[in-house]
Image 1 (cartoon, helix red, strand yellow):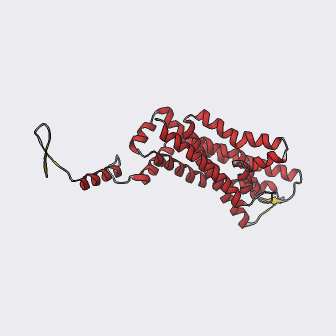
Image 2 (cartoon, rainbow, N blue to C red):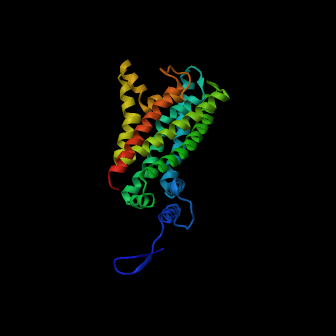
Image 3 (spheres, helix red, strand yellow):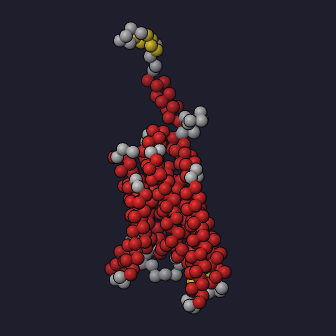
Amino acid sequence: MIDATSSGKRTLAVPREEQEGRKDQEEQQTPGGGTFGGFAGAVACEWTKLWSVRASYLCLLAGLVVTAVFTYYYASIARINDHPVQPVGNAAAASVVVTQFAVVVLATVAVTSEYSTGTVRASLLWVPRRHRVQAAKALVAGLVVLLAGAVFAVVGTVVARVAFDGRASFDAGTTVGQILAVGVYQALVAVLTVGVAFSTRHPAGALSILVALLWGLPSVLLGLGSDALEAVNDAMPYGAGDHFMRVGGDAPYSSTAAVLIVAAWTAAAHVTGLYVLRRRDA
């Protein structure tokens, strides 16, 4: 079909159906000439970016080393002081109070590094639907940390079993459950961190909020020794996560309720980050 323009030149009029088909095809193409686009392409892009910087490897290595040191210390103290026998996986669960910050730094850098260098503009040009960018970052960070957290727990459990020297019980089902619980909690922390990082867009701001939320406030609430404040701590992310990961404590709710509390905090952070991402320019 031939169409005439105001300048007198003739152009081919492309049917609307064909225009939409071309647009969809362009959205699916990648710089390499392939057709791996959409959300899957955004995930692949975030995966590549995560592993293209040394900070990711250093954070995971630091988490592994800290887990081994903490669990050895935890089990040794329990043995020396004749603490009651407890599941060996509790040592790995207790180490999360420290190792979660390796996860926080990893997820924070994954987001804020793009704002500090300006590459977030390229990311949003390539993936103009902003919710896909955040969802892809959250998914990649969550999956990586889920596996890393489980590995941390395995290493911590092995080290603690040696250091406990018989002062801990071992049940395969319970131990595997705690290893998975540590991985799930760490993954939720990673996704929560992505949301906070998108909200603040600055590493110092994100880390300040997360340190206060995951360590500062719980320490103050528990340190004051009030039953009411302890109840508040039980509703905080780490307080609920600790009940989710440990076995044998006096939890005020079930493990399912505990992980749902952490998930609710994660969802709130994700929604807040998405709101800021959509409302503010990069």
